[in-house]
Length: 418
Image 1: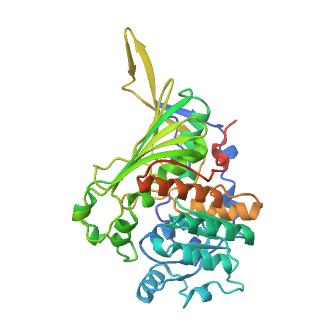
Image 2: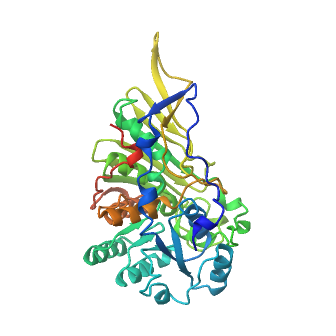
Image 3: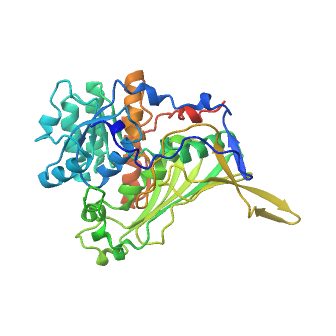
């Protein structure tokens, strides 16, 4: 399937309209200086295979439409009925088995996406790595730390790339905030408050939620795996890229509405953790499917606050709020200015449901890294540290010292700045 023959689903213009009255501009003024380097470079390495055609697979397909260089060469799912519906909707070649999907030849993939249920992530990723293919896995990389470590070791021994979602850290909102912090718009960052609350999900009509190709939302897996393993990474990846390794975690967790959920032994539906970073920054990260919807993050510095209201939107507004001493009072300004990066960044997708994220940014980063023979920004070591910290948060086991570390992550070229 080639995406240049399909409508560009939800792609918004990459050109910026003139400066807004409250806009604080970052980066070079020339559009040529900020052209995304990856757009023309992945044409020769753009063959993708999908394992798993459930609910999340449709988000990837919509996102792939923003990169015409990509081509999905095949898909496999253990559920033949689901596979048929997905492939008919997206006009993708259905494969009879995983081995068929991974068969060598002119249609062999450059990258395999593991979009199976979390309980299958380890086995499927292992099989793909053993077959000699780099893997981009949906989150979590694995549900047990030992399995995640085994995958990293296997990928390293085979000289293969391994990465895991989420990839929103590569998106415009995260990169804009990061560039602003590096440029010191609020002085040294001391503290971060991050919220990932999704409302009282037990009463939501989640049984009626379906993807464009008709896949039901996998509520049983979502409740069993838990909102922390599913969602903490959306902000944790940002914090790791910006502030480095988490050295220790102090966490608490609870099952507050387990009696209202349809699955036995659900994971904690509330976690709250204090994260201590090697750079001295401290962050508080809260995840729940109980509290009212709140996906805000606030970076608190000596001279003000950088804030974002949504992490599931690559184009979410990044706002700067200054701090002022007025007579005998210290106040955070009731007025804020939006910060933007001038020039082009990356293709956007229209909002579908609760998200407006380009899920293709992670796979594209991997393909570019392979072509350029460099380390992927979402490396296996990055994913392993993400897994350890996320599991520590969900455990609610109080103070825990992390064993793994996070490699240095480079900003995107269009957000590198001087």
